[in-house]
Image (cartoon, rainbow, N blue to C red; front, side):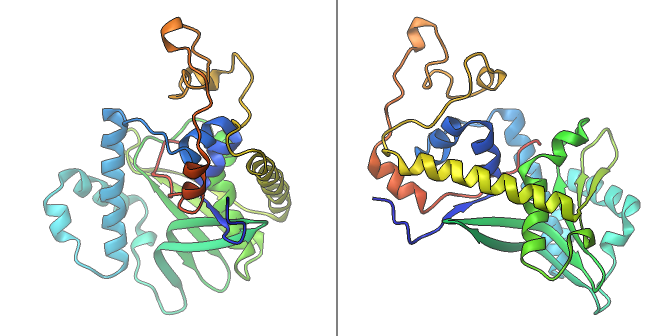
Length: 273
């Protein structure tokens, strides 16, 4: 049985998948079914890991020259970043808090919401969340605004600090964006905070209802014909690929796999928003 005394950890990636399709959430994080990343995605993830490590070492005061000497792509990114956003590279003045890979948690219901800020900069007047993305700037800012990374990162900081929502902002920096760095900034406010509270409560209640059902039962699916299914790696497993050679029944979950996975959900790697 699932140990209800241990909160289930959820990251922004978990919430994005759960909201998009509960069945996809079940396959990915409860059943732990995965498929290899395509070469393009893997290359982006590798660059993202290298850049995050570089920025983390810089904030910690560790030498970064050896990393730059070995990687011309990182050199280009760092030079461009320093030119367009020199304030990010200023040394703290003692009145300012700066921390790379800043980790926070917030328990709501039986869940522990977790966030990791690439860089958090705060002083007596405001707090800024900075996030590095190693892919081009998305054209749809509204879609990024509704992504759970934006929603959850702003929400958790407001809930776990003395800052009012209006004092908090989040800026995405897109490192590889048409030859130059670009950014998208979101300023938070009280109305958005109330709206996010309602969204979180609703989504977590939905997850609770699914988990309280028989652990061998499949989670709900999106409607037949949804575009979400077209690019989903589980289209055959869910019975949405109607070709005879791919028709299967979606009853593969064992209670043991669910129990062991619930306590060890991993943080999602960076993906395109």
